[in-house]
Amino acid sequence: MLQSLNVNGRSYNGNGHGKNGYKNGNGHHTHTPVIDKTPQKLAIETAVRTILDNVGEDPERDGLIGTPDRIARMYDEVLGGYNVDPVKLVNGALFDVTYNEMVLVRDIEYFSMCEHHMLPFYGRVHVAYLPTNKVIGLSKIPRLVEMFARRLQVQERMTGQIAEMLDEILAPRGVAVAVEGQHMCSMMRGVKKEHPVMFTTSFLGEFNDDRELRKEFLSLVK
Ligand SMILES: [Zn+2]
Image (tube, rainbow, N blue to C red; front, side, top):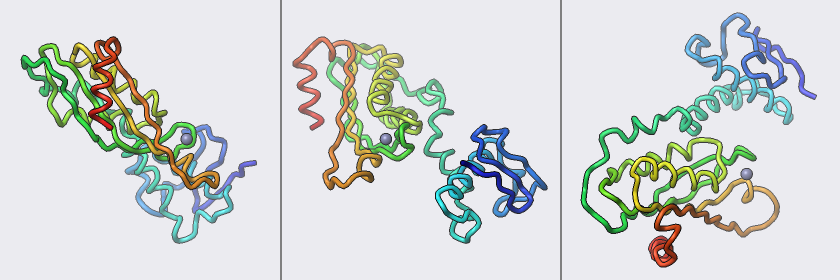
């Protein structure tokens, strides 16, 4: 059972109804001025305080007093992928090039958050495509990966989203995406000391049709 709290003139409750779950009281805050914060950030802070209180912590003690604010700001970054416009991201980085061979970008580091536990999973992404007449600037592929990683995700869906986005942007003959992931939600729980790496793939176009091509890609990324 969640309780209602009233701390420093600001009342909030643990009903989980986001924006309606808190009142701004006298407009003061213990750390940064409320005036700088969006309703979303304040709602996240309220929720974090509720969690702290309900796991048996004291949200007002020294080490924790700034934690709700820090987490709200951290989510802005690690879950910032919702607000990225892929068209703007890619803008100006598509080039007309006659090149028929596989373009491969390997070992793109990513950090994401599993949507089932809101704990990190992380690893590397490998991307390949077979251009028709367009190639994309090398730095843009890691940024597309980041756009999808910085959301609440499952690794399988993220793998498919990266492939589909490249397919849409480049209209290539084929796309291959392979993702390696280590999931904190499985690493931190239970007693197992082995930490398996999850491997997911998505193949479109010629990569989907041609077994040899898939094999070649997989041998290049392993
Ligand atoms: Zn999980």
